[in-house]
Length: 259
Image (cartoon, rainbow, N blue to C red; front, side, top):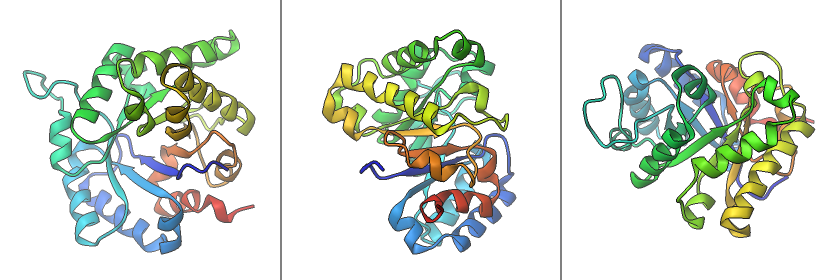
């Protein structure tokens, strides 16, 4: 196991209205223990419409779960209908922002340059980006997975200093495993997360590489979380569908108690 503190993040995507969100957070807090919070950092990333409600529950009940967002725009303000700035999120005490998720890249056409701008905006507003990277099935079968991920890391983090990279999170998510029920084997996931860490080492040095936290995402479940988290370069999980069920998500958070 890595000495880096694990981070388990729940990406709710476009699920849960704010009433459902409040109930989910409260139920999750009931099933998690002090031992869970002592061992693992936990973040929840609800839709924009839920953020204020979830913030209120976390703060009023003093629940030690970090509030996260799924996306932001890189500009501080402007004529960008439907977008939300990093500064707006910071005012809600959001601490982590997912940047460049494959669904944003594949469905909404976000480029590595867009991702890089967003990473910098998140950092400029005192929050931590969770920058996503990952390959398609065609790219993996063509032997292009490592080149694709290395490029996404280098271009997504371009222009950052070593200490900035050391403090952020990179999530490796093979696109073919997101929402499909397919999961990379622990060995495959480890190989690609090591690729991420080596890319950081090559451009920002050993200290940054040893400190940056790397999550695995892609159909993470209670049954596969322990084997994934045992890998030396996997420091956490970015969980999609399984995070919508508080009991299932809690079992992932408690992965260390299994096996």
